[in-house]
Image 1 (cartoon, helix red, strand yellow):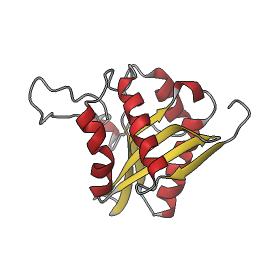
Image 2: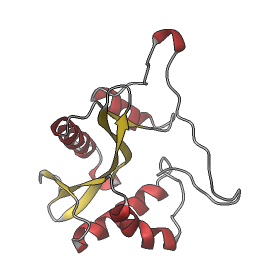
Image 3: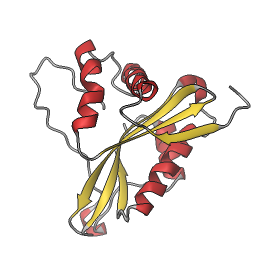
Image 4: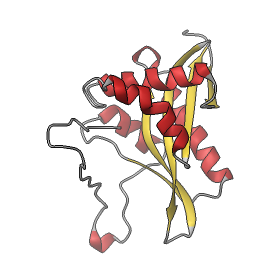
Length: 173
């Protein structure tokens, strides 16, 4: 795998190899300490591809080295009311541990950006855990920064409100 190049494709949710890769990479990301830190329930994994397919703005990119899928960018198209143009949110970005440091994450982000530019998007957005220094370094290296809409009001913060029962684990992703 070391000398092989990275290939990035937009996933086709009707292609079994793609759907297996989406489930496997999402499951691996969830288990990562900087992802969800715990395995996803089996019923979530079983519903994942159908749920992505049913969501009208889903865009998933897969990175492979040789015949092995090693990275995923799960994205959703939104809309900026202030720019009156679409935006793309990188909801999940994950690279398998065996492929880290090979430019896979950078390649996935470059592919998302190219698609966003083709579609006339105003911006890309993502969230990252504060302590995920490696990911933050990558995002900043390719031009992401904390959103600031007016300097006098400070930077934007990401908030979430769970709609799950108090005992349900709804961390990352």
